[in-house]
Image (cartoon, rainbow, N blue to C red; front, top):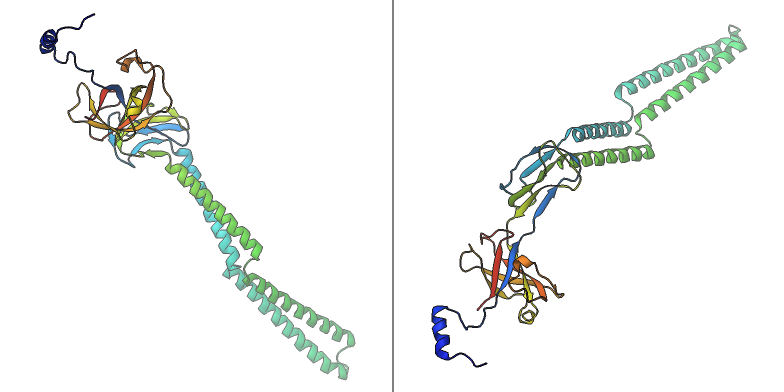
Length: 316
């Protein structure tokens, strides 16, 4: 079959611009984003949701609150346990109370007075026994009374010394360990209570709410999703014939139905394994069956939204 005359091609090209020109290389794709799915670390009933879909949030901004009743009670109990353990340790370290010490000192003074009385009585009986005014039996009884009085003094002295001493090392170590355990439990309860209020992990826009106030959210169940600020990703598919021409770092011109001019994207990933069937809705040429998934970074501030179809063309 003969080719068309040149003048006919020129006439058709004037009526239909681009006729006869080599097809322009381009790849269809769509905008993709990595959403942040915010969930609680423990299950509970949602007492408050502080944001709505479409709201912009800043890092650390409260998003929702779970019921705190049981967790607040657990913290109060743990705090009381800390106070009890601290008081017990302080009691073991300081010995007996001043009032108890005063009682023991008074008992020592009484025992000392009894000893002095017994010693004086024995001394007098020893002088009288020579004249026959005292008997040997009386003398023996008074000697026994003096020995008993001395023993009472020694006992009172020992009791006072024990009361003034702190507890034994093993007792103090056990009390210190009990205090540390109570403090750790209180910190755990405090952390658990704080986690009932969940804040935004990053700046962005609330995309979707999955629960309403009053509903019960399970552990790890997303309560809402956030579209974070920052670069978006363009997902597209490259034919097998074009793959050797591309490498990470390549720049593409990006266009779409409502895109402003001058948008670019940078190739960041190119799959090593092919896909045989790209998404039909984004495939311009169904004859191309062997394609490779590719990703390109889109600079922040482009105004594009996730899911928006786009076309990429290599930088001229």
